[in-house]
Amino acid sequence: MKSTILYTSDSFLVEGGKPLRGEVRISGAKNASLPILMASILSEEVCLLNNVPDLLDTKTALELLESLGAKVEFQKGVVKIDPKGIKSFVAPDDVVRRMRASVLAMGPLLARFGRAVVSMPGGCSIGVRSIDQHLKVFERAGAHMEVKHGYINLELKEIKPVEYTFEVITVTGTENAFLLLSKCEKRSILRNIALEPEVIDLVEVLRKMGVQIEIEGRTAIIRGNPYLKGFSHRVIPDRIEAGTFMVAGFLTGGDVILKDVRVEHLGSVIEKLKEAEANIEILDLNSLRVVGKGDIMPLSISTSEYPGFPTDMQAQFMVLCCLAKGISEIRENIFENRFQHVAELQRMGADIHVKDRLAIVKGVERLYGAEVYSTDLRASASLVLAGLVAEGSTLVRDIYHLDRGYERLEEKLKSIGATIERLPQRKP
Ligand code: EPZ
Image (cartoon, rainbow, N blue to C red; front, side):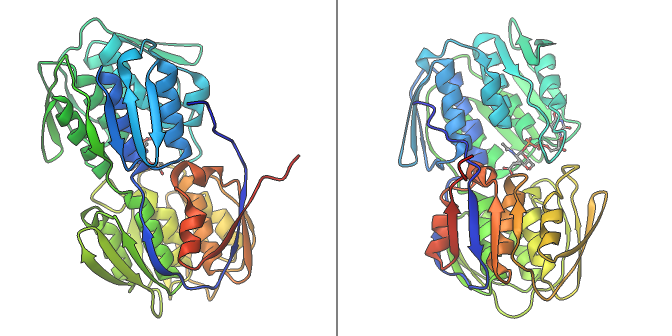
């Protein structure tokens, strides 16, 4: 698969004021697809993955697998990987730069080759995002680590069983540990693990490949297998995309039905929307309806690890709070710099005051369309949401960030009545 990835800094032109009405199908989860694609490195057999969203990040992950030597096909949401030909254990800088989640190649490469050379992921705009916990698990498993010329060089003779308690709850740290220990036959114990649905989806795949994993509370017991089978799996729906559309339906005073969701993964988002007095109807385990009527009530939000309120929904809910009847408080406990959407929302007339990790949001009558800049994936989603409800038109620039994590966003929004156009990058 050629690198057909175009780095556009396209823009979205959004007209505000139209209630969203209709039905939208939610795509597969980006953050489940990425670790599961990396799990194919552990096998020599063909791996099939269904419901994979067509995103910059998933295409980058497939490009990484190809650069390692795998054969890859990706058509209509179905990925077929033949990992037999994987020979390299080097994740190149230009790939890792584009996608931090490339760090998820470390665990499987180390398990397969006893070697992994991965470019140090830079920080990113939402925070330092160190990977010290990933590296501590690798060292516990016997890996020797050296950082040279911006690359992490890991080497281990034989994977030792690990008993480790994570010092922070880390999603990809937990996933990297599972991926490495999948090939260690002796029993490992990991404590204080992350329990996000995307982590559990990876666990389901590893079990299909022949890994024994038991999870009780935040403790996992893993017994690996030196020979791991291929797998066939369907990725869970993207709970963050679902939450984003639920906010859009409520925010615009619309009536939106979401299909192909996993209601059980949306507990804290549904609770918060009900607190804001959205009308939520659970239609069945995989579909729900959001009706926005009347006022938005102010909220007190504090992000935390699953099953708590997701940090990836913080920016989207901030837009709701901008138009609530009262004062809201939003505390961001996971990342140290995840309020970059605030300055852009203020340009649209929002009344927000940030002190450290706390944002105080005073509801205003309306937001006004403006030219705004995306800074990170979820912040850019919040700017589109603000544009949908602002007076006049909003130009959201640099939507490369959005293309990383939302599949065909403008198409889906148009299908439920939004006025949104993608403006290609202005030729220099
Ligand atoms: C995952 O990032 C997600 N990405 C993020 O989604 C999500 O925001 C985040 O989890 C939290 O839910 C993927 O799954 C690909 P963490 P991850 O390790 O794993 C600190 C999106 O929008 N930490 O759980 O990188 C870290 O600095 C993206 O789709 C350490 O200190 O997040 C952060 O403050 C954005 N040392 C906190 O833990 C470590 O070794 C949580 O980070 C690892 C993490």
